[in-house]
Image (cartoon, rainbow, N blue to C red; front, side, top):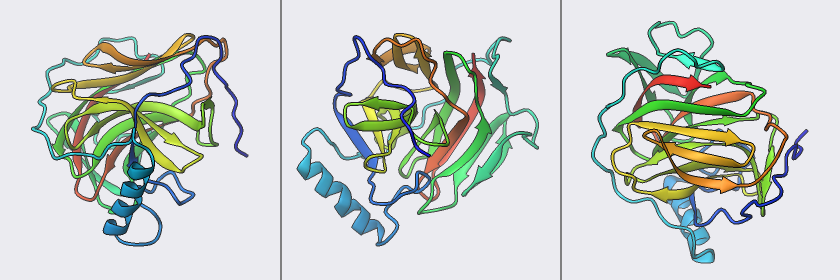
Length: 256
């Protein structure tokens, strides 16, 4: 049963600002990135119609240059999730609609589907406020790549008209990064705070009692302010590659 377990109150900014729809809805499934029926061209028409109806929506641009890794491994202290992808078997991780392999001590994840999100999933249930951060680099970006902790049962946030099950980070094919979320009202993957922050080598999300914040290369660059004493209920994290053939490297996943 879907329920909104947490409504941020107090000083919350009810507007998320300019929202980029990167996977338009009209279906009832969060693991698809295009509508259930029709071709890719049809899906683009759905997106264009949404953009015409809402001036704040913008299209995804062209591919950007690859961003190399520039960060060392995290030190000890990743209490809620610690993964350096040093074991090929990857216990606890489940792969869907993607292929995976280890390259230079990093996970290389490649989407194998044009209709579903390629991803690798792990349980993630801190039960407290947390920061989740990781190294991520683009190899081939045909659509977008990123990560998201969320609640598998449905929304835990309501901000304006958006019903959201969790927030993460995304790198789009034009080089912009932003805060990733899934809207259960429109069944769409969306991005807030989309901007070119330069070469992205580390991306993360902060859940705190007074904000949810996007971290890029170790710095908070965008946030949704608010106050709450209730810890958002999260139980799963996805590392995502969207678009057939999209390939990304992930490393040093740290939940603390």
